[in-house]
Amino acid sequence: MIHVENLTRYYDNFCAVDGISFDIQKGEILGLLGPNGAGKTTTLRMLTGYLEPSTGQIKVQDYIIGPDTLEIKKRIGYLPESAPLYHDMIVYDYLEYVAEIRGLDTAKKQTRIKELAQLCGLNAVMHKTIGELSKGYKQRVGLAHALMNDPEILVLDEPTSGLDPNQIVEIREIIRQIGQEKTIILSTHILSEAEATCDRIVIIHHGKIVADGSTQTIKQSAGKEQIIHITLADADFSSVHRLLEPVAGITRIENVSSPESDTLQIRITLVSDADIRKDIYRIIRKTDWTLLEFRQEAQSLEHIFRELTLEN
Image (cartoon, rainbow, N blue to C red; front, side, top):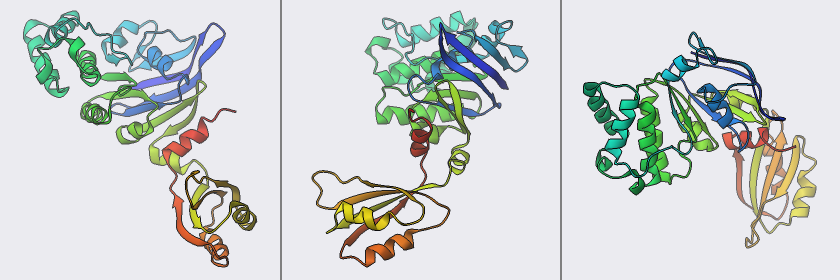
């Protein structure tokens, strides 16, 4: 449905997006991840026709950004990170105003406003001014705005930024519901949000794509690094380090104990296909240390994200 090829965007001499390419299928929920300044918002602005690419091509169905930008905009609903709302307007009046701008006729306008009020959970605040609303409700109004013309594609830039945990869950549920019928592209740096909501994830760093696939695919392709956590009593770090360092596969041994703790907490990083937990346990068993915890950390999206976006 959407084809992005060698997309680049410069701001003067600064390259914000650097030759990225990807495809988005109809009905897919795609999460665009990356640290602040990675190029997520610039990419979304080019996808929506707000910014022109310096080089490269964006194709939506049979239309191309540039010659067919207006046709593409008709098919896209866009919610920027800070929704541009008129705070002195009543919610109903604002949505009616948006419907008029979108060219909906009178009969369809009233029906659509009722549908969006139900979908976005706005029935209880339709009579209030937008300035009175919490940030969560303002995001819902912005989402209703983006959906007014029933677009085929919905683009959301940090849709849960600044919301409390309950509001995040509510917006996430709305996105999932919308995603049953529409293609959705959302940017975020909240990994749990992407993992819970998206069918596929693209991670961007310094304007380049560093990972692309489902959460499971990215985890499987992230390498063989494993993390083991050990908590010991009656042990000192130098002795633990000396005895465990020779074990094949271990690349790093760290003391992660909190200052007020009376136990020793160790984080062991290893790159190995083999399960060496037995080797570590045998070494500990020969000492006078008391083993309080021994667990292997599952490869998490957070860990992979950190590894892929670490500054050099």
